[in-house]
Image 1 (spheres, rainbow, N blue to C red):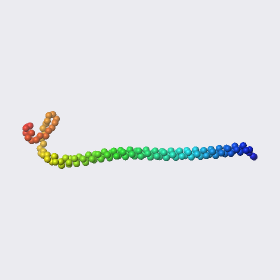
Image 2: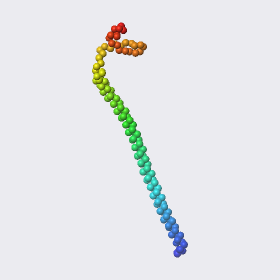
Image 3: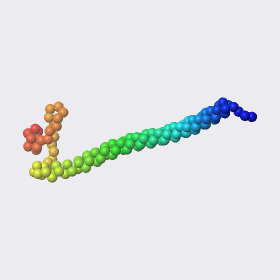
Image 4: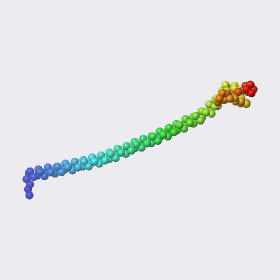
Length: 123
C-alpha cells in the first residue's frame, strides 16, 4: 500500500497538529495548576495579614487599658505626695492648729467656722 505524496503530507500535517494540541494541552494544564497554586498562596498571605490585623487590634485594646491603669496609678501616687508636700510647706507649718471647732449658720445653707471670741458674741 503506497500512499501518494499528498496523503503523506496530510498525515504529517495531522501529526504536527496533534503534537501542537498536546503541547497546548500541556501548557493549558500547567497554567491552570500554576494559577491554582498562586491563588492558594495569595489566600494564605491574605489570611496572614488579616490575622495580624486582629492581633494588632487586640494589642491596641490592651495598650489602652494599660495606659488607663497607669494614669490611675499615677493619680493614686500623686495624692499622698501632694498631701505630704502641702503638709510640709512653711505656710502650713506656720498655721495655728484648731483645738475646738465651732460652726455657725451663715444665711440659709452656708456654714462658717468661728473662733471662741466670736461665739461668745453670738451667744
